[in-house]
Image (cartoon, rainbow, N blue to C red; front, side, top):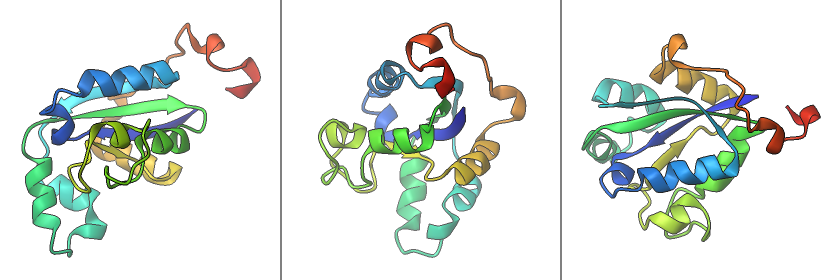
Length: 153
């Protein structure tokens, strides 16, 4: 099964949406293969958002992402990168479709509650950035046969 990184951002934590987001992940049938709370610092944000470091709005990213601890998760599932990106919705919450996490829970382009890896390759890089190998688990939940046909996973 594929893996992807998810970050519940401070805008999610402070608004008390942790349970709503995790509940939707579980209801969809995605497997949580690792989860922890951590306080981000500018160094890891410079690495994670290296493509944005030179943008004039980067200091506001640092400010918003360090406002409180975040929750990082590894999700597992068939096509999980694509599936979870579709669940997340477009970056700007005002433009995100109803039914998506951002469409239902946010109104901002930057305070958009969640980060989701954009490719399988980036997911693996991002997971290594936020998790030690021993913090990730490849267990097979007992519910798997009720989520996928055996030949799908």
